[in-house]
Length: 99
Image: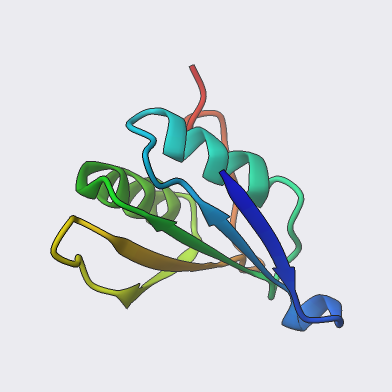
């Protein structure tokens, strides 16, 4: 798993997490762990290669009020990138990646 912080100002901060090679439920847990430390206006970019993880991450984040957009579509080997923006209404709740 790879994590990079991009940008200096809080509202422009982007965090990247690479969940390549991980299968559910681990990618959703990693996304939750990162989102717990983020503030409204910040973005999390998630890259991976397991299409079911992309669907699970998207569904869980939308359910909890995060803005989710696709940064890139699935590649030949299932690679994807999702951009998740923390909003004022975002709430992790107990079901995003918990066991």
